[in-house]
Structure formats: structure tokens, C-alpha cells
Image (cartoon, rainbow, N blue to C red; front, top):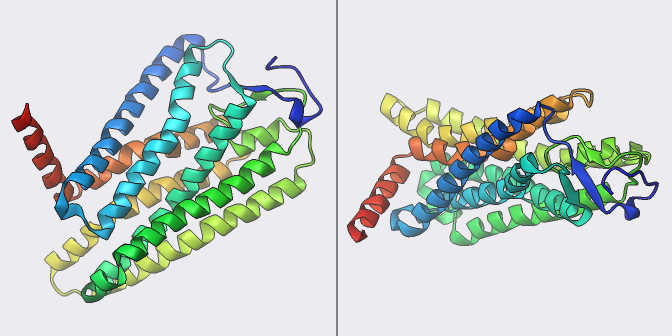
Length: 313
């Protein structure tokens, strides 16, 4: 069923996820690698959320955003990793049409929401460093909730548009998606529709999403750097930069991988898969490590939580 051509996208009932083009004996190695990374994602992000929810000292805007970042990372990696691991053991490697739509919709929703959330976190750091006396007033609970809700809303709107645009295409000749999950570009490659308008709209949508978030992040950090350089004490500068370095590291990894993937020509699909791995699995794995290893408050809260657990046992 999965490899039969069709001239009408509405007749498609399933697709085949080709995955990585490696020798069959390497699938077990890939499976174990995915399993290890996914286990670390679950452990790290569930642990981060648990620490933030249980420690009253972390009841601040910064950790409210960080908790949502962990939730997003946990969710969108769970949309990708389990199906990819199943396909390492499956000969057919098929995914239903509805499953493909759902996977693209949820992934697009949460990856866009993460971009806007990172912009909100940059704004939070800008207020904390450049206007510390007004921080508690400007970063109110209401504003924090609005910023997070707005991130999810923008992700939802973007996902609806992107998913609708992609699945109105007609798929013909092959249903084999040369990727390990359903994504827009690999689906466009197997379409027999005219892609000019589709690509123009997709590019415009990406620009509308990426440019504002990058502009907010860049402007925030320009003001942060300017403010920090005015601090006379070296210890003060170090402390100020340490509160931003974790966030800047996460932003660099995510946007670096996204840009690399979308700038890679279609004739190099394997490079796109490697870049996709970076932001679908590597970034969600690294985020809790980056924030916990470089954050004194998180390390102390985690230590306290583990000590409490040992006392109960």
C-alpha cells in the first residue's frame, strides 16, 4: 500500500519513513543511540520540571519560562523519537496519513512555540540585568502567563497554516519520505504539485516566525552586553554574564541547527537528517544539562529534592 503512486493527495492512506540510509546491521546501534538520548531527555526534562515545581525558591519568571521550555522539549521529542525507534525494527517503516499529519502538526506547534519562548526568556534577562529595580513590577505573573500563552498560540497558528499547506499537495509516484519523521521539505520532494506558491508561503511564514524572535533576542543581548560592560567589578560582570550564558547556549544550538537544515540543498538529504537530529533530540537533551550545570539555584534545588527522596526511602 505504501509504495503505490497516486495522482491525488486525498487518496494517500500511508507513507513510508525511509529514515537513515545505513546498512541494516547498524539499525540496532541507531536504536540504542536513540533510546539512550531519549531516556536522557525524559530524565532531564521531567527532573527539571519536578525541581521547579517543588522548590519555592524557583518560583520566579525565569524558572517559569524554563519549566515551559522543558515541557516543550519533552513533548516535541516524544512526537519524533518513539516512532523513529519503532521503525528501526520495522520492515515496512510505514506511518498512516493521519499519523503523519499529527506528527507534523505537533512538531511544528512546539518547535515554533520554543522559538517564541526563547525570545521571551531573552526579554526576561534584559529586564533582570538592565532594569533590576523594576524587575518584579515589569515581569509580573500576568505578563509571564501572557508571554507563554502567546508562544503556544503563535505555534498553533503557524502549525495549522504549515500543516494545511503541506497536506493540500498531491503526492504521486512514491510515498517514501526520505526522512525519519514527517517534515515539510521531505514531503514536498514527493509531491507532484506545483510548489512555487507553496514554497513562497512557507518561506514567508518562516520569516515571520524567525525574524521577530531573532530581533528580540539580538536587541535584548545588545542592551545586556552594554549594561554589563558598565559594571566596574569583575565579579559583578561574571555574575551577570552567568545568568545569560545558559540561555545563549540553548539559542545558539537550536537556531544553528535550524539554519543549517534549511540552508542545506535538497540534493543532500542526509545532511538535513543530521541537522534535524540536533534540534529534535540533541537540543532537548542538552537544555536541562546546560541549565542545571551552570545554575547554582537549580543544582541546590536538585540536591535538596534528592536528599528529601532519600530521607523518605
